[in-house]
Length: 56
Image (tube, rainbow, N blue to C red; front, side):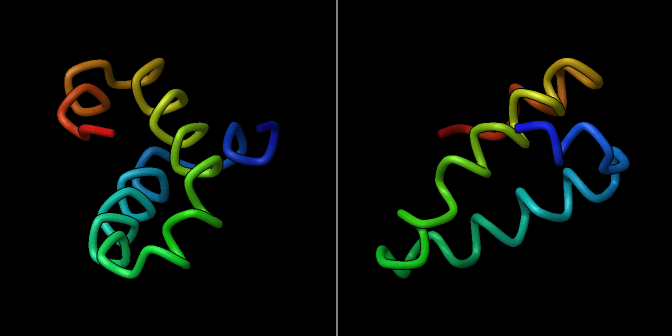
C-alpha cells in the first residue's frame, strides 16, 4: 500500500500497537488485516528488528 510509505516510523509502530489491542474483535481485525500487513512490511524495511518483533 502506497499510503503507509508516507507514515513515519512512529506512526507505523503506533498502528501495529493499536492493531494488537483491537485484534481480539475479529470483525474489526479482518478489515484492517491488509493494512496491518502493509504496515508491518514497511516497518520491517525501515527497522528490521522492530518489524520482526510483531508477529502476524
